Length: 409
Image (cartoon, rainbow, N blue to C red; front, top):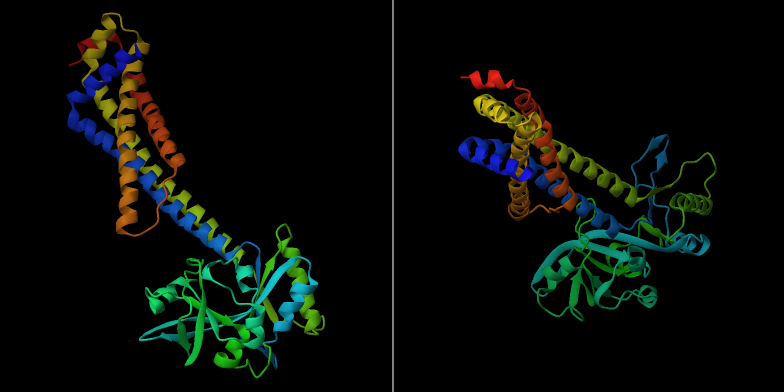
């Protein structure tokens, strides 16, 4: 019986091809919109998750704080009280700290032969690559000996390498920073953008001692002062508890009385990135909901066309009942027609959604990620809409009086 109803539905849909196509169009647009919108949202979310992994979920940034003069508080970074010795103490005295790296960066022009490039020059201690979980593509890292003797060596990020070295073998090349020659000893693996959109590969790194002596000078005349300490917390340790220990140790080292504010700032970049990821998840859900509205509109179109079809085929319904068709047979016939419309629209909508996702990725250069769950849910929703919006017209057809139906003109 189901096969016969399906054949009958196919014949009925072929009679009014244009009307059937326009009815299906609403479902096609709805399913395609859900798949494409979820793909865009999922692509953005996947990109954010990659950025979160590149930041590291167990990092704490300790930055220079603000100064207060006669009740007037300056902005962050105006009170440089952090030193390299603070970084050493954090790593030595707090068991939860795996490594602490002192850093100081500044945008400068780097020159190689006839090429030059403005990039972030970072003075780092040997722990920096371990803290950031940053590997080398080739070469060697900055060592404790390089830092101790203020060696004129440099590590190059891939963006900087591309713009300064082109196709030349990087190791052993000489880069000039503020007219000081540095020898390239390594090339960093690609890191990508961080959650603020900054290209992390657009950088070069030199020993912190070299940066201070040859490039930047001292901060406010202080011999070992630094702007930032990046702290890596051991796996399994509680991040909040570790931050509390860091704060207590630094306050003790800086001899701050209980009634004084911190002269440094603690930040966890992972929390900021997580907030962005949560916003992305909400946006993905919102986009899917918008696409679902199109599906509902398509369902209303199916109901409308099926009601018209019931009216047009009233005599046919009466005739079928007169020759022995039961009400449930009539119900099944019209319900199968509605579901068939939805399923055809769902299949075409999946193709449109996949093609649309690819087009968005190609032309808009947005990352998209097809979610199998979204495809299945959209298709299942389309089938459910066929049942839901086809049920009322089907019940109306099944409830017709055979005699009145035969008399209908």
